[in-house]
Image 1 (tube, helix red, strand yellow):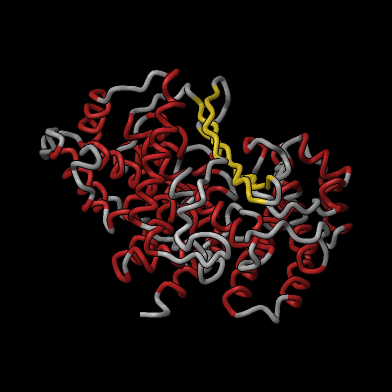
Image 2: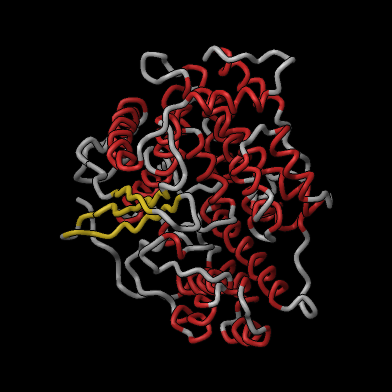
Length: 468
């Protein structure tokens, strides 16, 4: 039967990793313990049930969170004192020394994680005091956060544009050379019926149930999760802890958080997605959003990870999600491939199951992935202007005005988001999709749900091909 959480203390490797993670998170103004994902920055989940490390309650951590860390009016001497007090610059070496007895894949996962945290730490120090600390190179930030799988070359949007043309043509829209593709996309958008704000939550709940049914039929029934006291395909687990809430007049489009927790010794699977209704939604957009954020995307993957950890099948590092790391690359790639996980390919979606217009939206989303990938390369690495980034996103990636604005903001300019998160969607999606094509969705699902150990994008890639 499902066990309760482990001993309510944190020590050794767990303490060192948590100290480094919370220290970096605080320097960027994040608060992983906050109930709302809107306050999360680098550390995204904390599901172990264990108390935060001492650094979390340090007065400087509190100050950093209040002023948004290095984004606010931070005192450089405070940063230097903070880093020295907790020995943050040397922690990665202590962690690496303590994990030598881990199996190879687990050791590699943790090394990839702490190397990324170390790069973020040194970036934060340089942001706070550029006169005394050197910003890690753009290439170093890209390479570390992608476990050497990222590239400084621009991703080519033309293949995705062609997929979009085909999807639009199926919907009856002109895609000839005489018409600008962005104009055609805009015409398609104008034809889509928007969901009334008051109906978004109820339709999202229906979408979640529909997608969970597909997940059970197309993915779970082929797997054995190996949890004592539960059906092998988890058909007796309801995953009922997720909430979809709507908000308005806030700065974000959506915020997703997994809290886990327990009720009477059993996992509660608590999760929350908050959507800003100031952003219009169609049925297809909401279905895709739910597949990415909830089932079989972030929420469900987090819930399975939580369940496996609680049953002793994964280590402590599975109890927190961390942005701008090889793990984040995997998770975005997993979430972007929901319909490929169901059907083996986006091209195999049955017309009687889903509307043809969903194919248009999927193609449009994948062009946004390329915009995310390329924005920082163009601006930070190649030195191209923000006006050129805007033109590129609008014309080459055929994105609407809101995405153009977003891509020319933090995605292009931020020293962490641009190089260390920008490639997560395109690289993650491409890697997971290629694996589905090469080895099949069942093998990908087994590895992607961490049944052979916790994976980031590098360990996913090595594990998924290991038994061909």
